[in-house]
Each structure stands twice: as C-alpha cells, then as structure tokens.
Amino acid sequence: MVLAKVVEVIGDQGHRTVRKIRCRILEGDEEGKILVRNTRGPIREDDVVHIKETQMEG
Image (tube, rainbow, N blue to C red; front, side):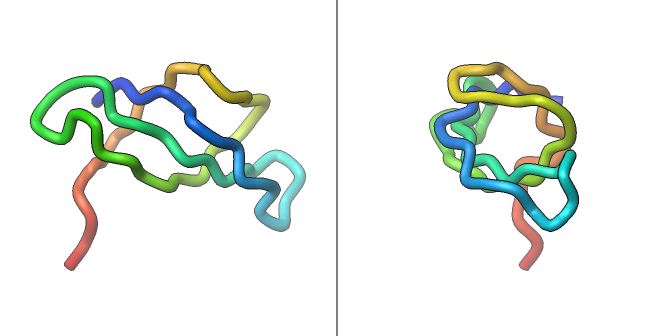
C-alpha cells in the first residue's frame, strides 16, 4: 500500500457512499503521480489515504 493525498473530490458516482477523487502519490517509485480513484465513505481535500494499486492496466 502507498500513501496518497487527496487533491480534489470530483463528485459522487451513482451510489451515495462512492466518491471519485483525484490524489497525489506521496511515496515510492510513483511519487508525485496523480491518480483518479473511487472511494467509499466520508472524504475531503487534504486527507491522506492508502492506495492499493498505483499502476495502470495497459
């Protein structure tokens, strides 16, 4: 798992508890990379979250 800081909360994704966020990786080989992920539960800008996967499928 990698730590990431929430840069922006983009909005709700259909279900009330699912939100799409934009976050910046804080550590590891991918440091500084910005990702878009779906999250559950309350979240706001500047929160720090754990990201399981940082690599994109290709």
